[in-house]
Length: 414
Image (cartoon, rainbow, N blue to C red):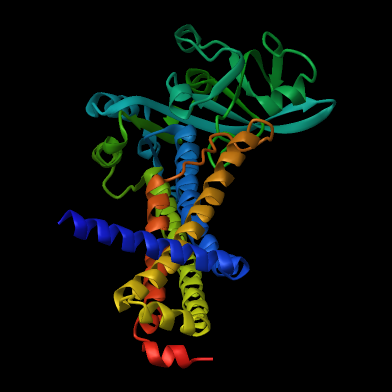
């Protein structure tokens, strides 16, 4: 039994040695044949990496705007018709959402309206946004200078404001705006802080480039508005977002006239859309990568068929001295596996090196915040297996052709 195993090991060793010598004798041909496998395997890893990177980046952007966020407003179609003041979202609605939805960890409301400031003798339009205490944690606002409103500011209806960075630079260029007075139309505010959005919403929310936040009681005091344009609720975890969305819609419906409609949305739909787009692009690019592998496989098959023809006499000599058809088959299959396997390893190394290089360059270049490039090791394994399988699949026909050659005819071949 040991003798049989030893004999088998010798045959495998001999087969591998002959395959490697054959490839070494035609280095340029082997390298060119391998090129398609390198490209295909690298594409598989890079495509999956790009898909994961895009998905991670979009999720980070959405969470930076406000994670697990649900927002509600009076429907635009309803707002265009005769809407009573009682149809607007009220402080009572906000308190009902806070008390009636345990999964809502933060609830806030906003009311924004246009005003103007005078800068260098010129009138400059600004957006004044009345906010409630929990607006800052819900929207992830960053306060680089000064502070956000505290409970005393809301209770005392203090004439204080927090400016956007652009507005602060515009009105108070080159100096700290905290503690300065700001004249907005006929009103005067004391600046207590400067804010910026963690991720810019480009004016798609109530926050504009030139905005100032003020306590909502101050808006109510000056304008008489007791309603919110937008109501925000933040769920305690992502799984609770659909539930909170439905409950906010139910509370608003139950507290107002049945015919009035409210738009209650969340950012999960945007994330789901981005996932679907990312998945579709990944599938398309994977098909391109697989096409590259198929083309490389056809190249392997063609080159090996030429090789079989060139080495017909060698095959005849091996068979004449006792080599079995199975050994010839394994030799040529081993050559195909070597070409595809080594090509896969080179392609994978190139594909992994690219995101690692981008990570290193990220320390020196201004890349977008939150950009992470994860490498899926499952895609690395898949690229290697698929590439080797391509070599076996397309290498089988030439190997079988070589194994079926007759010794006498092979020795007569010129």
